[in-house]
Amino acid sequence: MAKTPLDRLANLGEEVLGKAAQNPSLARLLQTAMQLRERVDDLTKRVRGLEGMEKRLDELEQRVAKLETPPKKSATKTSSTKKSS
Image (cartoon, rainbow, N blue to C red; front, side, top):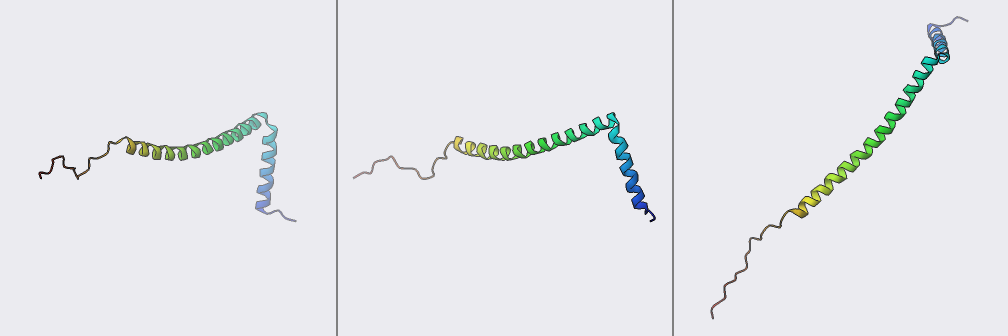
């Protein structure tokens, strides 16, 4: 049975991975890369949570700003003059 170029490439890749797993330096590098990926995933989740909090904070700041503004004086004034009889 003749091996196709794809089969040969797959076998070569398996051999390289097998040798890389036996090398302690490469094993540590791979472990560090996996830890980095996990940390990045964790940070991504936290940032998503912060975006929601920022949105709520902006809404609350707008509400407080509305409450702090002094009420406008009404255009209709009550007359304080007495009617003469």
